[in-house]
Image (cartoon, rainbow, N blue to C red; front, side):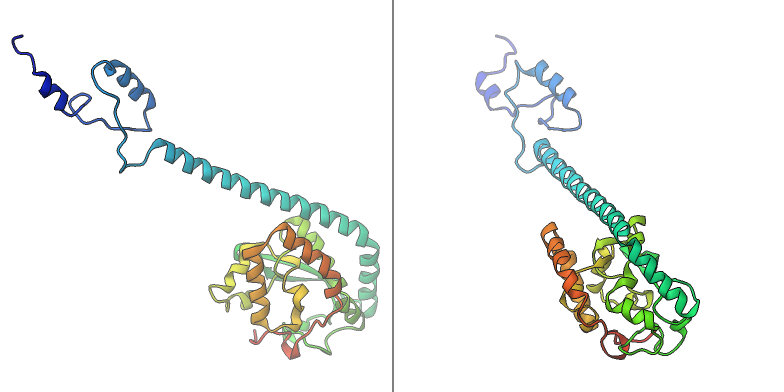
Length: 271
């Protein structure tokens, strides 16, 4: 036939749509489907280029990331529910003890029952931590300042017993209810201490501070400062429900261990 293209030439020519090699786009599936239907009788089925990403891969990656985010969000929400329930129950059970301890603090010197102090929490954000007052009023401006050592003369008589049994920490259950803290996590520290953290040590700020933690069941303030921080960093990297249960189970025994380390409570620096 006049003007007909030889069969051999047609069979060796590269298939194309609209004069260009076929391209796959996962952003316009309807356009591709329509074009494919229109030309299905003229062009062989196109093949995806192995060098480029496919929609299947993109969708799978997106789905995996989305699932991971949902999982992390669910874990955080579950932890928050446990914190709220645990703190509410703890406050209800400890309220008679808290009332008696607060009365003892008040009767000794007539000063305030609660001590409020700025501490560093999640992502370096400061919050107001609550404790029963165990030292004389204005103690942070006397003696060793913020550091507290064994036999510190600034500690009141009632305060010695409260510190020995960690009863002075019970008001922090309110910090847990407010969302400043968690039941389990690294103990919150002071801003001047955080300023001296190394990059690795700052990892302990990736989770909320807690009432008790991995460092507390391994020696509390009786440990050197760097060792305590390293234990907290390990917890951040390895925390799980099983680790949290282990901490809860061993916390009662930790309450009767030594609380102090020399004249600075284990902190080598000074404010």
